[in-house]
Structure formats: structure tokens, C-alpha cells
Length: 155
Ligand SMILES: [Cu+2]
Image 1 (spheres, protein in one colour):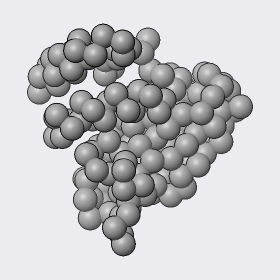
Image 2 (cartoon, rainbow, N blue to C red):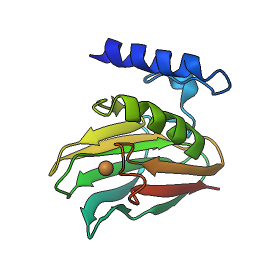
Image 3 (cartoon, helix red, strand yellow):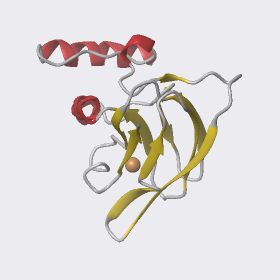
């Protein structure tokens, strides 16, 4: 399954020559920093995924971090649908969303992204190594458009 996904991504990205390629699990290409080190301290930030009244969202939808800080994101899906959390730049999430439209059942279990069934929780330990504004979003087709995105500002 993983190989099939990787092949799908490779194919999709080889078509758009101007777009930077990325690969799941390849540390060099994480746009929002790097996977965290479990031996080092981390601040915990809980993010709840939910939907209702025709909208989908993350609460909170804005997180601030300092450059070099580690954050342990505790993700909880309190909605009735599956959701995901993908931490990247807006641009990378844009590219990834296009791939997801072709492969909507892509399962994510990556250092920077998880897919959660309703009622499930998961953790992402992340080190913000770069200043800038990053995005966490649910890239299941339609969800980001329905409001399922948030911002991380790293100072
Ligand atoms: Cu979602």
C-alpha cells in the first residue's frame, strides 16, 4: 500500500515540472521543520478536529511557536468523519491536496501527518526549525475548503 501511494505521488509530481517534489518519510523534504526528538522537552498543544453546521475545523486554528521549539501535537478527532492533520507549508499542502483529489483514500501515518478515524487520537512530535508561517490542514477532498485548516507562526 505504501509503495502504491509513493508511486502515485511520484507520477503526480513528475507531471508538474515546476513544483518541488516531496516524499512521505523523507526528512529532507519536510517543509515545516523536522520530526521531533522524544528525548527532548516538548510543549503539548491539543488540537481537536470536528465538523458541524456545514463547516469543518480545527480548534485551536492558530498556534505560535519559537524557532527551535518542540511541540507535541495531541490530535483528537471528535467529528463523525475521518479527518487528517498535515503540517507543511501552504504551498506544499496545495500540491498535496491536488494529489489527494486523485487518490482520496491515501492513508497518512507520517512524521508530519496523520489520518484519524472518528473518535481516535494521535500524536505528532515536531521541531520547528525555521521561522515562518506554516499550515496544518485536512487534505481529504473538500475538508480544507470547508474550513479545516490552521496556522502555525514560528518566530
Ligand atoms: Cu477532514
